Image 1 (cartoon, rainbow, N blue to C red):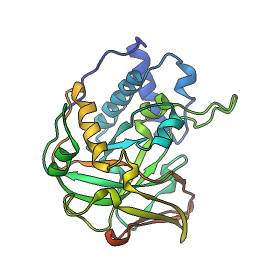
Image 2 (image 1 turned 30 degrees about the vertical axis):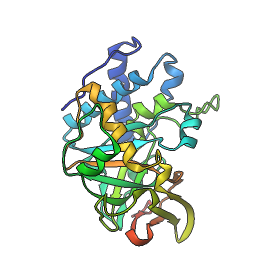
Image 3 (image 1 turned 90 degrees about the horizontal axis):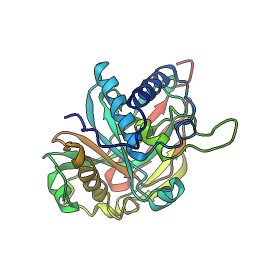
Length: 280
């Protein structure tokens, strides 16, 4: 179901649609656009989500299928850095999914990064408002380890001023979503305490990051509940069968062509991918 448009700050609808088209072309050409936060200083978070919805419409019209959602900026540290008090969200499309142990075409991305998180696969619909952590645990068929691939179709740093992109840049750019790898051991959400799921992130056999899932809003299911409630005013529900990336519990690590990433979740196994060398 498409999202309903809520009132924005008054930025012209034509500007929002044109911005979505520019982001769409930036992904296809691997050429990031200038920061929206500098071009449109009055752009609000709701404006940015309006751009994201228009971008989603362009991708669906081009034949891509929505497979789920991702939640970002779930840790307090990342929220403070972004100057916000809540997470953000984006859309997962069918062509973003990479097989566990698979090779990722590095040429597809501009400046990819990797994060470690848990993915909830829903067995029942979730409709806000009022969705709780317990509703998420009941509605989820299973949870599995995941890697998220991030990319930025907006310049991360403005070359002239050094200005860093802001939350509106990230949200409009589909929350920087670019890819997902699912793997490891599938578990039912009530069989283990998901707060204590932990992982090591290795790049080329060297540990780069580590974390524990409780860093995601105290419990990763809180992120899924937040998303269901955040989407409710737009007339959108989370649907059975959708994959929901609950938010990273590691900081993102840049990926270069030839790099192999392995997230070791201990009892839950591993999930991995390799970025192809440019000549591959």
